[in-house]
Length: 413
Ligand SMILES: [Zn+2]
Image (cartoon, rainbow, N blue to C red):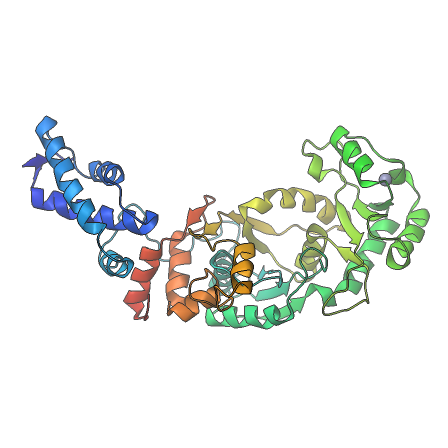
């Protein structure tokens, strides 16, 4: 007999059961269960009584681990569905927003780039946005951020595929927008900002400007008159070549973070856009277009990945320049998937080589992949909402998702 943490005696049988629970989880997380990991977990629940106890526990764990490591993944998942892993507290809903009242309508947006397909990490942000808009009877908009035809060219079929995925995830879409169709709006704001002396066209070569920004030194372009800037802006729309001119927002050249100093709002890209073709050559960057849109669409809650934290600081200067209120923001930790196919570039490669049948292959961590695997959408929603809005990155716990799926009655999970 061994002592448990609370001082009660605990049977070998009980030790074996607890060890098995952790071994199954460990095997699902890492491919094979490791004795050391299982012992550590076990000791968080049970304390050995003296040397003999520890030795006995090790003996039991060794046996359990060897047994568990002989199970197939399917068998492991089936077994895991029966366990409750107590380390994560389940939540029934998302926390209330302390700045909102019962009558505040919360408008959110999900802003994917249609240069790829939705993966589970995107789904997390979309579900959180949708859930908050439902909680507070507001709107949930989808806004395609497709203004980089050069490095992130949109894939035409991705627009529809993403909407299909969101509908499947039971998101209540209130409206769909494409930034490439809102260019005149960005141009109007750009002109206003130039007119009011908040923005200037910078024709410094990138290396010089990089040095200037690092040193906090203003370039000569910054003091050009609005009239001169307006003329140069027109040339950005007609004749400047890629890399010759950018439109910058005047922020603070002494800001502690150099990336915040006079950040770029628009630049020239000569590559043809798959949708608008050659109609536009001055394209907005993320921080400019998204802030203008959030303001125009009356978004009052932005949920985005923690890696976007600095963007809030950058955008604050723009909101102040246009005299608008910055939306509230929740930055959440990234939801990742373990395995070789966790990156977009790897998926593209595997599709090209024929290793995968497409973006919806059940082996991919895309939303369509999960759909084809038979995971019920509600299981994904429950998983995301249950995990909450913490800032720490996490890996998808497939055993937990499967358990949620089984509870709902999904197949193939
Ligand atoms: Zn300059």
